[in-house]
Every structure is written in C-alpha cells, then in structure tokens.
Amino acid sequence: MPENVKFYDNLTAFENLKYFALLSGIKNPETKISEVLEYLDFKGFENKKIGEFSKGMKQRIGIAQAIIHDPEILFLDEPSSGLDPFGIKKLREIIINLNRGKHMTIFMNTHLLSEVSKMCTTIGILNHGKLIYKDALKNTMSIFKDDTNLEDIYLSIDKKELSID
Image 1 (cartoon, rainbow, N blue to C red):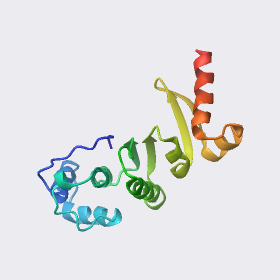
Image 2: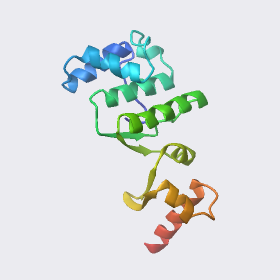
Image 3: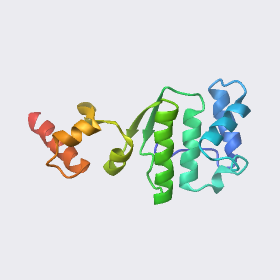
C-alpha cells in the first residue's frame, strides 16, 4: 500500500474495491468485499463516495484493497502519514490484527519509530538500499540499552554503517 492511496473519488468504496477485486481475479467479489470491510470495522461506508472520505478512511480502504486477495505478505509505506491520533490508533490495531489474526507478514516503511516499538516484533534498518541491521525488537532494546529510544538506536546503527564505508 503506497503512502498516498489513490482511488477513483467519484466511485463508492464498494465500487473501487470491486474494481480492484476483479483485477485480482477474485471470484464473488461482493462477498469478499463484505468480509474485508467487516474485518476492518468499516461496514456502513461502502456506498459512500471515496471523495467524501477523510485521509484515515482512505487509508482503511487502501488496506482493504491491499488485503482483499489474502496476501501472505503486505507492504505498507508510511501507513500512518497524515493521520490524527485516533486514526493512528485504529490503523495500529488493524495492522496488529492482520499480523496476529490473519498471520500476514507485514513490512512497514515508516519514519515514526515510536510506531515501530508499538507494533513490530522485528526491525530492520536499510541504508541506501542495503540491510544494515535486523533483529527482534526485544533484542535490539537490550543490545542498545544505553540509547533511550529507537531513534537513538537508529542513529547509532547508521553512524556505524556510515563510518565503515
């Protein structure tokens, strides 16, 4: 799911999701759309035009589009960008439920490291497209116990990587 989800604003949520479901080859898209919207606690909005939605509502429809075909792996780019605190909390719950309830592996690209500590079990840090660090969040917090937060840990790792090159 890209950071800025794009839909056809003049179509309803249902019409947008049906379009993408058909592109994905989903049989019985109406049933699948209903299931996904129920799972995301978004029933009742399917007949509203996307152009009337807030950023948070569009993000949830973006997740619906991304999971409608039941992927094993989900990539989210800055999923909480531009959301209010309530929207971020709801999105966090959805992501955790997708991982735990549907057993999806979720790769989340974010600069909000505070969100990483609330949702992730493993972290990886990329520097210029190269994986420079990967470990369980719990291990990371114990290895870098002198650093007070994930931002400090990132900066410590990044400085080490940059000094090697």
